[in-house]
Image 1 (cartoon, rainbow, N blue to C red):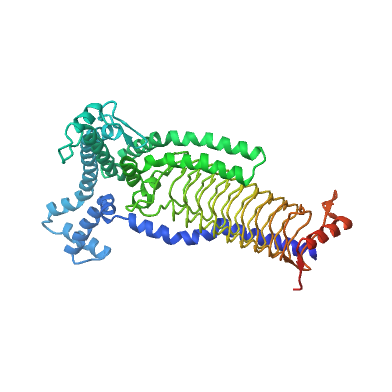
Image 2 (image 1 turned 90 degrees about the vertical axis):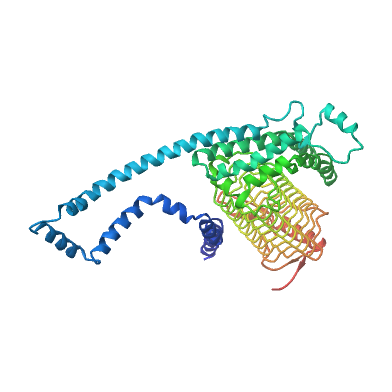
Length: 532
């Protein structure tokens, strides 16, 4: 009977987990899909695409109207009566019989003429595209006056000329200023090519050009992360503590963040405005080219941009290092091996997404909707998840060192073997959560709700469990020490506190002496047992 009840609970839990990871988020995504389809719908293009059909229907309609809307049998009788006359109107009959052939000839000639016109336009547009490409790439910029990281170098002769005219209030634009303005204007003009206004054949080359230009701006910053992360690994491997982590944040991570100031230059703003236009529709239309693409420092928070809608896409390996993506929609997207270090994802919708082995260290995920998300083996060290929703989420083997999960809703989430060293989970909701073998050393779980949670074999040394609800929790084989704080924590008769091991039949063999010792130690350190 007990085995049947356990099996039912497992099946029920797996069903809900499957529902939240695969189904629930799609209902919330449906209105967004309908709105996007309506926004992208163009009646003009629809009519243009079915031009042959409208010509055919118009011809049939006119003939039908001329003969007073007859049925097929009536029309057949009318046509037969024409033929049986003494002097049949052969011209009219020939016209009717030849109409299908004429229509077929017109169809192919029209298609051929349209292709010729399209090729002529393509030749003209190709010259325009080549000219804009040269301006966008900066080939027209004066030599030795290029810019690096958003800064420009003023030529010596220009600087001397400016000093000799201090009395003149009116400032004159330099040759570099004009060339830089032309580059920015060319970037904005390429938006029409990205949208397909000049033909679909230019859309992908235009996107690749702007994507490559952004990569050239951000490549050095992205490469610098490797050194920053290597220093973090040294700290983690050599007895990490809060002071060492704060020093790394101040001396390494924040300096790395400041290196992204180039994104706020005029060129960077122009690229972001064009690539991120219409809720990221251009990125969405080129989703096949986004895998392992570097979009580090992408600032979607510009006033001219709306929130990104990148849901349901394959974005594996994409690099959004230090990007501002607040309120963006990534529901159901494949984001495995992606990079969101230091990214801003506050109030983002990421339900049902897969972020296996993703890097979200120091990311801001405040109030983000992460229900049913798969964070298995992901790096979330020092990530800010304040009031985030992680119900039914999978964080197996995830790294959450010094992560902030205060007031987060993590009910029925799976933190099995997760590293929560120094993590803060104050007042978080952790009902029925799976924390088997989790590393909770130095973590703060004050006032958290761990009702019916499974903490078997979890490491709770030097942890704060003040006023924690442990009713019905499984505390089998947990590791604690004299610094584990249980003051005000409550448990009941359903709370499992025991020590032992599993035999060859995977049945738990309780060690009475060690179990009683563990229970007494927890009571000495503040744990209280209350009635239901």
